[in-house]
Length: 299
Image 1 (cartoon, one colour):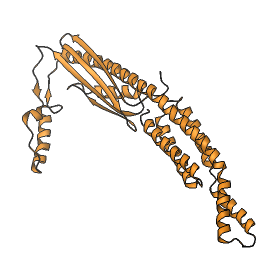
Image 2 (tube, helix red, strand yellow):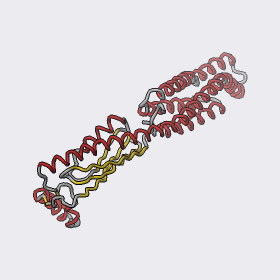
Image 3 (cartoon, helix red, strand yellow):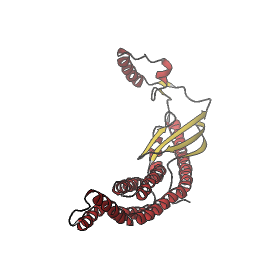
C-alpha cells in the first residue's frame, strides 16, 4: 500500500434486503471523489431515507481528509402490495407559495410533475410494521455506504501509489539542481569581480586607488548576490518533502511547501549574476511547478 493517497477515485457496492411487510429492496451505492481543498460530502438518496446523509458524511470523515466526495444511492422496491402514496399538503403549499413569488418576478411557473418530484411532497403512509421494515432497510443501506466508501478509499490509495514515484522523482530533480546551483554560486564571486574590474578599468583606468576600490565594490556586490541562504533552505525543503511523504495525509503541508520552494527559486534567479546560475534557477522553477501540479492530487 502506498504511503500517500490521491483524491480522485470511485467506489461502488450493491445491497438487497427482503423484509416482511416492507417489500423486497435492492440498491446500489456509488461514491466518487475529486480534488478539493477540504473534505466536502454531497449526498443524494431515495425519498424517505434522508437520515442516511448523516451516515454518509460520517463514513467519509472516518476514512478521508480532503476532496469533494459525492455519494449516490439508487434504490428499487418490489412490493405490489405497498401502500399508495399521498401528497403532503403543507409541504406542497410552501413550495407553491415560493413558486408564486418567483413567478411574479418573471420565472416560469412550475409544472405538476416538477412539484411532485420535490422532496417531501409525496410520502407513503406507514404503520408500525412499515416503519420497522424501513428502519431495517436503512440500516442495511448504511452498511453498503461503508462498503462503497471502503472501495473509494482503496481507489484513492491506488492513485497515491501511482503518484508517489512521480513526486519522488521531481523532488530528486530539485535536489540535484540545488547541488548544481551550489557549484554555480561558488563561481559568482570571481565572475562579479572580473566584470566589475573590467568596467572600472574601462571607465577610469588612471583613478587613484583603483584596485582597492575594485576590491571593496566587488565584495559588496558579491554579498548582495550571495545565494547560500536560499540554497540551504532549498535543501531543507527537499528533506521536509521526503519526510512528509512518509507521514500522510500530507497534501496540505506539501501545498504550503511548494510555495516555499518557489519563493527560494525566485530569489535565486533575482540574485544570480551568471548565465549558468540563472539557467539553473529557471529550470528549478519549471520542476517546482510540475511538482506543484502533482501535489495538488495528494490527500
